[in-house]
Amino acid sequence: MARISGGAVLVRSLLSHRAECVFTLCGNHLLSVYDAAIGTRLRLVDVRQESAAAHMADAWTRVTGRPGVCLVTGGPGHTNALTGVATAWAADSPIIFLSGSSERSLRGKGAMQELDQVALARPITKWAAEVEDPRQIPAMLARAYRVAQTGRPGPVHLTLPVDVLDATVDELDATPPSQPNWRFTGRTAPNTASIDRAVAALTQSERPIAIAGAGAWWSDAGDQLREFVEETGVPLFTIDTARGLVSDDHPLCFGYADPLLNPAAALFGEADLILLLGKRLDYRLRFGELFAPDAAIVQVDAEALDIGQNRIVEVPVVGDVAIALEELLLLVQAKPFAFEPWVRRFGRAAAEGVLARAPAEGSAESPLHPLRLVREVRDLLGDDYCLAFDAGDFVQWARQALPARVPGGWLRLGPMATLGAAIPFALAAKLARPSARVFALTGDGGVGFYGYELDTAVRHSVPFVTVVANDAAWGMEKNLQLGIYGQGRVIASELLPTRYDEVMRALGGHGEHVSRPEDLRPALERALTAAGPALVNVETAGLASTLTEAAVRRKLARR
Figure 1 (spheres, rainbow, N blue to C red):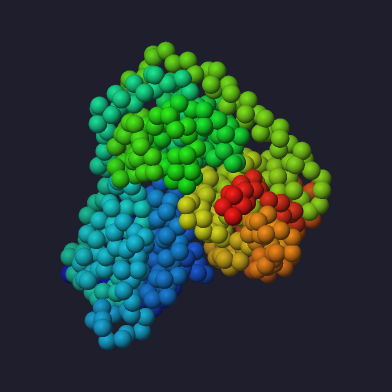
Figure 2: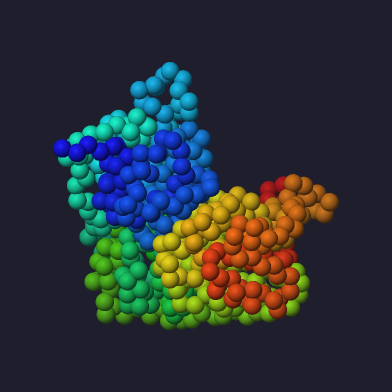
């Protein structure tokens, strides 16, 4: 009987779960895995920093709906990756986080890179464990996939000691079983009484809104969500990974669920019924304070602990969002809803927002107004695209004016707001959807974190466009300092006007610099047709976004 290494067992097990890419950075703990992957269908995408590997696994997950895999070496490789894992944790993204480690047989002796990796991972994962024997790998990996994708999704972790990966076992002792698709296995149907109460609340409502969040995306509820709003006429907003689940172009979808960025959402305070579909009452919804105190809330979520956080929920519905919508649809058909006057108000607010942005979008000033830059990107999106948004003031302008039309096509950082992640997000998105036009939207501050992943994109021939809004500053922090403390009080938030396009060319990609508005469209078009990754470095005005202006007002009010 043939004997195989623990590394080979891991590769076979990953393939049994239909893994396609593993985002990784080499280290001697992982060599048996790398060797076993040669000649298989498993693609290793090697990066320049371990946290980028975790970000890429996260983005792969958000674009495809299937868990991405991050594989790093132990010790500092493991700790480097934790920022990316924490980002996935905050965004409910079910990634498989695998780390090598020092020899299990040397524990307690002071081995190089000896570290309690499981303890470090546990607070930001749903489950974390160490593999003690290569024969455990198939069962433990199967559990990892199941835990990651059931209930509230999230990352899981396995530490794989090098002596476990190097050890050999009989092939038949470590054969992975056929694995189900856990995303759609064991989904919870809601209680019938709670569905009846939700329908009753909707029937009594005059001004309802629906807000779809991450839970709607992970339950693949796009079709059900669209049918529900079309049947009832309830105006819809999307947020988090649900952006694009129903296109912003749909007459009943009014875009981003944030009043600071979307004028239509400013009407939230007038709604008498809030239907939350896989969305928690977290800071994005001001912990429920966006809504009138007497507004009723119907909250649908697969995780019971997430219901009623920060505010009393009149109708809690514990269950899968897609199944809940299917059951709601059965009961709302042919009911005489009459929300048209309410919906028209959202349409007018959205149209007024477009008109208000128009002068800035057409501005001929230099440096470029951020909205002029955003308009040129919007005009080039096409039908199949993916946007990876970074943090900072420029990105807030972009979130206002760029539409979400494609499921899995709007990659926002999530509650961790991990600056710099846009570039690894975009790289993984292009690998996941090769036909899509993929843009990484970032500022010059963000480039400093994972800029060398552009080298990864060149080495792996991954063509996407990085758009750098360059105002030679940490724009949001600079604008906060100016707004709160005044002129002459700016410190540690200014940068050099670095030519990131030249950095891109030095790495082997396509780079262009833009200082005049009329030169931007041709530069973006050339970047889109480049053979490999491209970067367009745009001199932009460092203007405070509406989100930053609101933050200044809040901080001044506390003083």
